[in-house]
Figure 1 (spheres, rainbow, N blue to C red):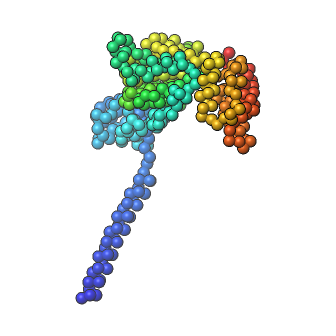
Figure 2 (figure 1 turned 90 degrees about the vertical axis):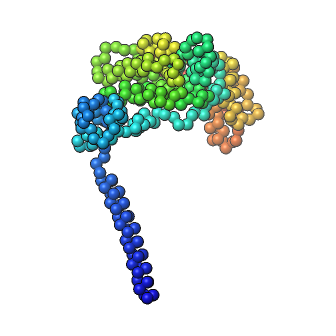
Figure 3 (figure 1 turned 120 degrees about the vertical axis):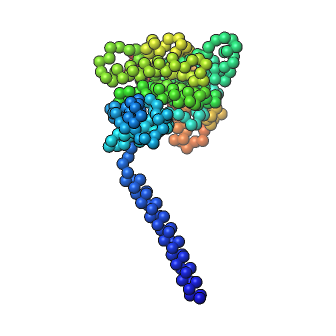
Length: 374
């Protein structure tokens, strides 16, 4: 009897092991099938012709009349939505979420900038103006409503490179609870026709869906220069991107929780249609030349985070008349720190600052000889 029970036990264990192995085999076969399956192509749904067919645009920029999978929810098929197309037949087989387009999803910033107003030396007037135009409408909109005025819709920051435009925008984003979406103007210029305007629409759609939000478009002159008779397809595409940007800025009112900030080094080249009141209501200049008070604020703000020897005299640098932007002052302090590291010291002495000052000012003067914007 014991031998019979032992045999049945062995048979049961064998059956269990066999079932486990079968499940593992099925799982492995499904994995192989999935790996060997034909990859899908991301496209854009344009419009529906009837219940079973529609027009889509593939990633190559070509338009196709394709069949729509019968199991798909037609209510989710909206113009400009991202879809998955079969690689060979281009049939529409799936509807993708809006964030499936990585070129748009990567624009959203999950982490807020760690720059605060205290980290920005000087620029008191610029801080006041940008807070009135961007921060206060998002945090205290009732103030504007009670007075009976509309807050600015968009803000333009202009001035030479290195004057603190981008840094101040980061401080604004840090001081509010708004989502921060940053994009460089040149990112809207894509390979295929129609991709740039679609990106503009998607950026503003993302901002509306995640409001309150701040859209920061850096180097706006890449897509918003004065219009002319375009001779090439690339020039016409850039102008279409500008037209879409103007349309999107007109598409939301001042009461919206979406604020637009643009920055440029070349405000003189921008299209007048973008600069008019109602689109960019507030224009804030960032001057290159700083007075002694501004210099002192910048030097002391940066030096407060560094280890300086007691003998260091920042005033000896502040009183000099060389034209210094905020970026050059930051570079001077950075270079002084590197010289201290090079000599195995744990603090910065006066000679480090003097050598760094001479090096950076000389480099800035040589760069001015190129006359970049003349």
